[in-house]
Amino acid sequence: MSDQAEITRSTDDSKARLRLWLRLLGVTRKIEGELRDRLRREHSTTLPRFDVMSALNRHRDGLRMSELSGVLKVSNGNVTGIVDRLAEEGLVERVPVPGDRRAMMARLTARGQEVFAGQAAEHEAWIDRFFAGMGAAEARNMAARLKELAEALETKGDKG
Amino acid sequence: MSDQAEITRSTDDSKARLRLWLRLLGVTRKIEGELRDRLRREHSTTLPRFDVMSALNRHRDGLRMSELSGVLKVSNGNVTGIVDRLAEEGLVERVPVPGDRRAMMARLTARGQEVFAGQAAEHEAWIDRFFAGMGAAEARNMAARLKELAEALETKGDKG
DNA sequence: GCCTTATGTTTTAATCTTAAAATATTTGCC
DNA sequence: GGCAAATATTTTAAGATTAAAACATAAGGC
Image (cartoon, rainbow over all chains, first blue to last red):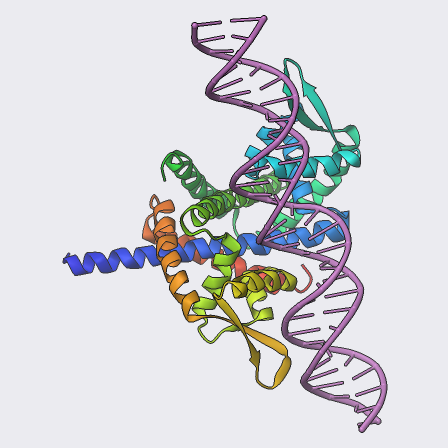
């Protein structure tokens, strides 16, 4: 392959990757928009609130505030506000961490678990429907490739 | 296949699709976070501002405010504020649309084009690096599947 | 020409989001 | 024990985001 051909190929690959990223972003925004609309209309809640409750539902013993922000990939200060509002409504409670008075665990209340269960069932059905055109094998395959990508991104985080 | 087996398979498929969605969301957030950090540190700008300028860069004649919000999949009011700030800095200008005094076109100024060119070159290099572990054929394949998904979501938008 | 309805944008109020500063506590060193 | 550095959270200020209301103009019926 000539030097020129190498450069050409490389540029084309770069364009292909950029297009993939734009497509990833577009699909994600579209689905997030749909979910937001439906959560608002049918459950009077928001996507960030649902995300927080979902994370806490997967961790029944609760999560520290910093773990919560890590899982959701949002800032620390961000979850403070969302948990504040969920706590005001009695869906989430803050529990002190024994042995570390700086830290707080957030966890779902009994009522929070009930409310979330109703939202989650519908959420799963919506997602199933959005991805209905994609076979299960295809979905598993794409998820596996994205997982590889996520892992590569993690290890690259050091320097970039 | 027994009814029970069908139900089991169907539930597993549903879980696979949900996992794909969570993976899609996770990867997208991770990359967005990286881009935000780099745009802030190296170009003193934000991801929403970059997105607006990028859309305007692809449409040199400008875009109506509503077209801009449609392309970016954000609300109308949202782009008003971002364009306001970009216009204050002389990177974007609002141009009246002949024949429709309600509408406004937003477009990059000459300086906006220069500033964006510098940001875009780096942005493309970052993306290329994030996706480096993925071959070009694989990237094209995934982009094609996501495009199908996006089209299915569009046509479903009617009722959902 | 009017009047209703539709369309394009901005404004408003509330929530979300971030980065950075502030606060509180813990840990390690001496 | 005391003090510096590290860690966990909240607060703050600015920007981003949405849905809904307000505003301005356009289009179509009569």
